[in-house]
Length: 198
Image (cartoon, rainbow, N blue to C red; front, side, top):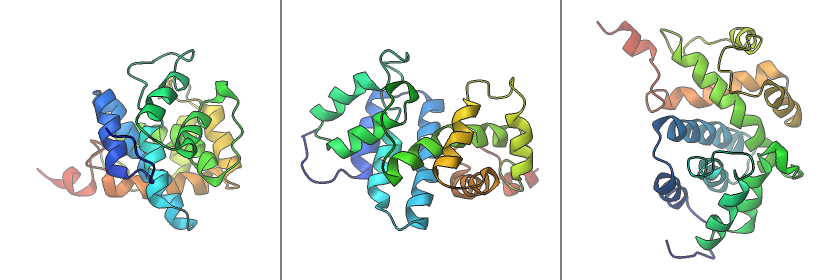
């Protein structure tokens, strides 16, 4: 990709992501985080394209750098080489707790808040016959209390994320469910229509 000085597009971010990421699970996670982050961008009058770019790229290097001593910090030079602006790179880096980067912008707070919860809500949808349809915050909270369910999701980050957005956890869950519903099929989830199909 030729380095760009203009604002990157969602299309460029998807191209970068799919060049480094082949796993369906990771691509679906990126789409889920993108949908949630974009939902908040629209809701709060922010730059939706920029937020989509950051959300798609937040784990772009996870397949090649799967450990904390590499991800996401070793991905930053790759993004610089590809011409992504520092605003994007710093936002991507900020989602990693171990890097201790201040989440001092609405974008950084939202990415952090949507990352773990999007993954968790997606996992909840995968085990329900109707996917995300009718998924209530209380069901999600109940699953959060089961350490064995979606064990890779950091519960403390789910709670801290909602708090960082100044939202009650139930409200944040409702928003993420609403954000993921339109892309349920892309996420490999059943929907009311597919559940009813013979």
